[in-house]
Length: 174
Image (cartoon, rainbow, N blue to C red; front, side, top):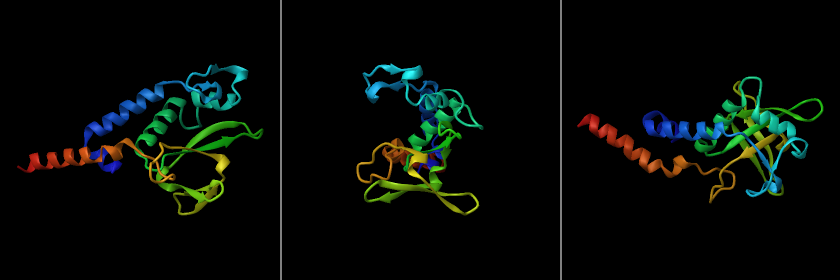
């Protein structure tokens, strides 16, 4: 649905681009107790200072933080599975980079006790690898019926997208 919406209805692509671009321009900050009213933690007071630095400077070897945040936001708006972020660690265990895993090739492995026991990633050459839950950050909008899916704005707009596409076909043909 998202691929069809993005390719056939131009306002869908523009909406995703505008939202993702605006979100990517905002720097990532840490708030005390993750509260909307909490004080902003900076410097030594931010426990995950290396993560904050990665999110606001250069996320990985191939892209700067703006491009990473843009792609992350677009995936969150489009993907029914959410966003899967691989944490790249240095020798000392600190996070030195973040990579977006392809959402169409990544799936959580459900577990009755831990919710997720790992993440299965289908590699381009056919091999499947299992990643540990602590090596992947899974971000998603909660789906009301399935805790392993994400609710996207395009699902809600699916009817409008289909009507727009059918109207274009009708106008062209008649």
